[in-house]
Image (cartoon, rainbow, N blue to C red; front, side, top):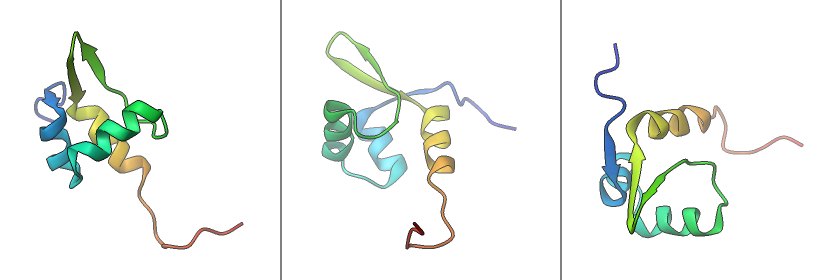
Length: 68
């Protein structure tokens, strides 16, 4: 059972949850290079916990090399 997966996190909280720096999330959002949804409320940026969990799940791997 997922508890509070609608929780909105700040960029700093989301970065800590993912083990990244806030600047990494800022760069991804600016470039649109990574499919990680966020909400922009005025100047505030927020991430839903469920979107962060989906992002983690979608980036699971079993090897570090990619096959062509």
